[in-house]
Structures are given as C-alpha cells and as structure tokens.
Image (cartoon, rainbow, N blue to C red; front, side):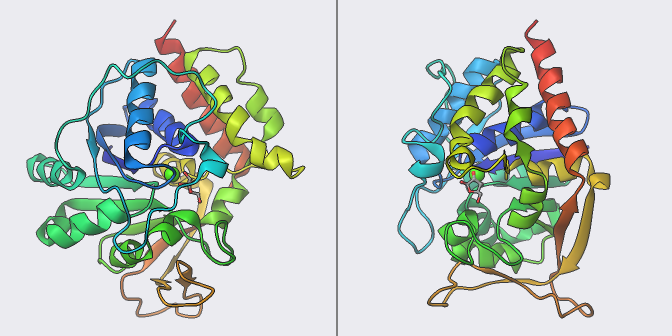
Length: 311
Ligand code: BDR
Ligand code: CA
C-alpha cells in the first residue's frame, strides 16, 4: 500500500495517471493532490483538477503550490495541452475547492500526521517537491519514494536534450535528485516504450464515464502524434504510477542522475551516469523498459474499474 501525494500540473496525462491511481484503492491511499505551474498556469491546472474531480465525483484534498519555477520564467505548454491546459473534454464547472493550505504546508502536515511513510508521485515540474525538501529537510525520513516523470537518458522533447518537466525547473530537479530521498525516474524512453496505439485509445469511445473522459482527453492529446503521422503516443505521467502498481512489468537500473544547469544547449538535461556502476551517491532507480501490452492493459483495466463505479 502506498500512501500517496500526487504533485501535478494537469495536463491530459496527469489526469490519466491520476485516474489509474483512483481505480486502485487497495494499492494507493491517495492523501491528496498538490498542483504546480507547468503545462499551464497554476490557476488553470488547479481548476482542471477540480473540474475532473467534480465529473468523477471524487473529493481528494487539492492544495495549490508554486506559480512559477524557482529561477526561470514560467513557460506553459499550449501546444500539447491547449489554452486551458486540458483542452478536449467538456467538463462541469468545479464544485470542489482547494484546501487553502499551500502545497508544501499540506505536504508537511500530511507527513507529520502520517504514521506510515508517504510516497510522492511527481508528474509536473519539481518546484513544490524541491522547496518542500529545502524547507522541511527533517521530513525526508518520512518519504518512502519520490516517483518522477521527468528527464531522459538520451533525448529531449522540449529541447534537443531536455524533457519538459525538468527543463521547466532544472534548479528544482537538481535539488530533488540530489536530496538523498529514494527517487524513481520515468524518463522519456521508458514512456515511449509504453506508448498507446491511437487505435487502442479509440476503443474507449462510448464506454463508461471514465473511459469517455479518457477518450476525450486522448482526442486532443493525440493530435500531436496524428499530425506527424505516428501511430502511437506516450502517456508520459502514467509511467511512474504504473511502475508503483505493477513493478514486474518494468526493467530498471540504478544510476546517479545529474541535472545540467549551465549548458548553452543542454540546460535542463538529465545526465544519467551510465559509466558509474559502483559506489553510487544518491542513485536513482531509472525505469529502463516496460512490457507495452501489459502496461496498456493495466490502463484499460483501471478505466473499467472506474466505469463500474458510475453504473
Ligand atoms: C511531461 O510534460 C508535460 O507536458 C506532461 O504532462 C508530462 O508531465 C512530458 O514531458
Ligand atoms: Ca504533467
């Protein structure tokens, strides 16, 4: 059982990852969500999450965090996620509100009050996580793991060598990777390995409420792949969550991961030290590969479970 805080910037794939977590209360005790600026402004991503919770009739605590990276200016992602940050589905107006606690205060209170260690699923820029670790370093011992979607072993998606979440706030990422907490990294390559075929996503159409939300999200989110003639797309943020749920589907390796802050062409790059295999200081568990079919099946099973809740 994971006692889970989901730190996110919804975002299509953030919502899909969250739905998979919501489908599995036997594995995930969701303590709450914290939001961070990234795919869109803090107000927009928070509102998206509240509207989705209204649609899905859930009421997890939502606490707003930082509205900009530690040093960089905010650069949102309308190309991938639209002007709202969650373009595509028609969502009800939010009938939920935020806690009124800042994200890092919510994290602090939750960890202090928990008799068990808490796991973080970090699927946006790492601003909240980093500043929580800096502000309340003594609470690191209450962290079971920090499972991140971010970075890459070789490539990039926002810059030649940088993935969006890390590029968006590299200073934060450096703090988290160097914190000494157990870090699990789902970088671009393993996310691509688990890509969903666009034809598979079509199968959700006309099923229950959760499947329909997934389908509507994918219609917008999948455009990027369609426009390029690809037959599949990665649902990035789902990857670290499904690792927690079904680790047996993954191949993993332990490496030190450094974050490039100063490179002219490489700021925000995760430098995975493939050469160093011994005496690792702060190793991260790098998700290396995944069994694609079982991975996608896990997604559809979760949607089925959720659909049944609304029958
Ligand atoms: C990451 O960037 C965001 O656009 C997605 O939500 C995901 O967290 C992928 O690089
Ligand atoms: Ca995200």
